[in-house]
Image (tube, rainbow, N blue to C red; front, side):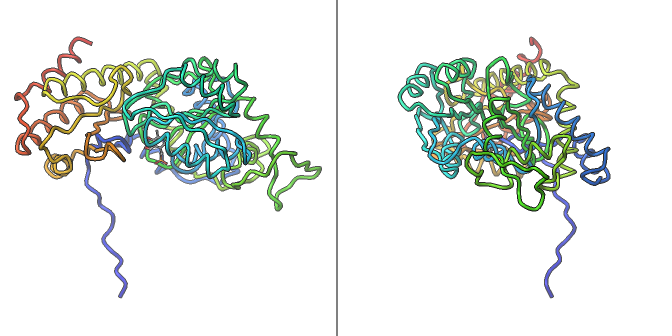
Length: 409
Ligand SMILES: Cc1ncc(COP(=O)(O)O)c(C=O)c1O
């Protein structure tokens, strides 16, 4: 007899790793709402509302602000595969795992990828990026904002200007920072940006909010080829190369997300409810309030970790506000600490990838978990976990130092 297993009953954990984090209960409730058909006026109304909310989240006038169904990398693939025609140049600054991911996705889109590299734990000076733009003359600069693997945030405010000077587009992967650190799309001149729900937006993974401006809309519009079974009368295909993916074809998605509602995929109803609620909650709190909360939390984490005598990872002046990297002290079994935190306290923290695997811990405090109680509980549990694993921090010092930051913020 094939086994049918027990009903799902996962334990409740405090997810203080690099993401996913605990979803806001209001988001989970939204996901349990009744399904509607995709052309029900009520549902298409929710689609339009989601677009309007995303514009506010992204601080943009961009009409084209909508959801890609799939995790954050679905948003990356949709943007890259629709913008880049095979053989075109893309410049990618690589400072961690997600810069590498950008290169890999761009390569799969047929791009000629020019990667520049810096040590993990650092960021790029704008001059270095501009020099590379002069040298390689790419059509697109594709960069990560917060590279979760290193906990560093690349400054973006000069890059829009640089791209304009060199007649290139600028795309940013803001998966890990959106809703926790400011990403003012129009002020910074970002042509396209994508994100994910499972970090500072307090939702489950599975939907990627994207935004792009008219420059991008025009460019991808020249590659518009509507799939055969749904072509309207008078259909006139674009002269540009066919976009390699049907699922991530932005021009077809634009038709679906416009009044023509030309059918593409079946919009993921429950994920749309989730995304709409995630963004509604952030805007209801106030964007500025959210950014300040993450910044104060970052300072509390830094103070707590330092007071425990532990060393922070990377160039702290560029640290993401929602994640903290901590060097694993010599002689301490980092994996065992992660295991003990989960088993004894039901708190998840993480290590990192590649050269940082087993060298650092990453503790996230973002979105729904960007709260004083979550930070203090995690620091207290961390101290108690480290002691039997060979690292004795001054008792209570971490919690006291973090609390002091909150009390004086
Ligand atoms: C900066 C960044 N980009 C992209 C991704 C990929 O996201 P997903 O796993 O949702 O596809 C992640 C995931 O952690 C990320 O942190």
